[in-house]
Length: 221
Image (cartoon, rainbow, N blue to C red):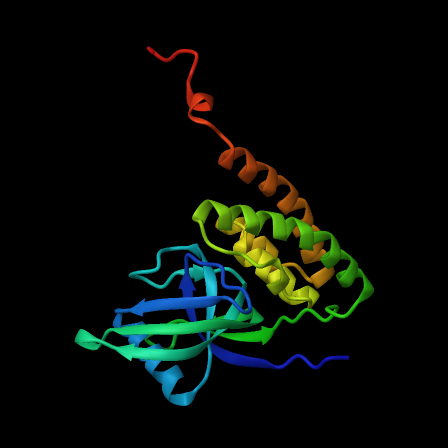
């Protein structure tokens, strides 16, 4: 049985859902977050990113959703007026136990929220069903953007594939948050299978639409 260890984590509530393995560039200009990032960079520790439930990114402290992802700083560029351009990448899911308001920035007592079924048969089978849908979806996106896409570069690991699929799919933030909250890799992949079937059909319809399709029967023309 895994031992759950609670620890304190600096929090950055954002209008973004961060997944493990996802790059996250940030431009830091608020004093509280400059303090937080400088501390994290100096002490080589992560900060947590959680989708805002109530509030805004700038101004008074926002209320975050309970499930988020830690971010590891990979580079910091210091620019005028103490502002920072930060490159970071998502690492591990966490669950907020208690918010703490005793610092200039928000922090929380959290516990890690890992998926422990990555090597299960169910996760592997679900990944095999999702892979062709992700391949088709990303191929269509790449074609629309006139950029190359090599489907052989999709990860073989079921959880890595699940997180990549969650990062790539263009859906509302709350849909992405629901994906982040899935308790297992198998369930995440099953949810993505349903999601990708509908989103691939929608994307295909959008990309194959002709100008004539947009002509209303009530058009003055």
